Image (cartoon, rainbow, N blue to C red):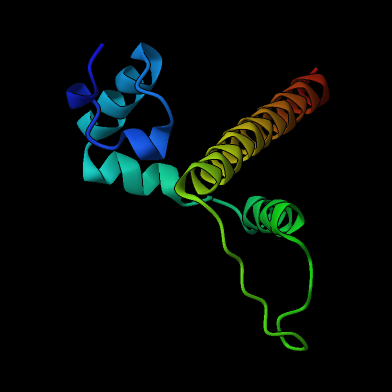
Length: 114
């Protein structure tokens, strides 16, 4: 596969078929979908994601240190991918927890009605 099919090969590493497919998939998303996927729905998920990124970058408090981070595009892309995967995992866990709470409430309601 040639590099002309991947407009940003330096961002996604080598031009492989899977990265090309992922890039095309992301490009095909509507702006509304990207916006919705980019925003955590709960403060808890946002806080966990922030702690994850801080843990990956290092946790020096910025109020006491002038922190400057330098990296390559490849490593920044990997950090972004890691944050996205963590976000998807946390969102799925949040949805599952809400579903289980709903199910328990439904079971409690049903048993109280008997």
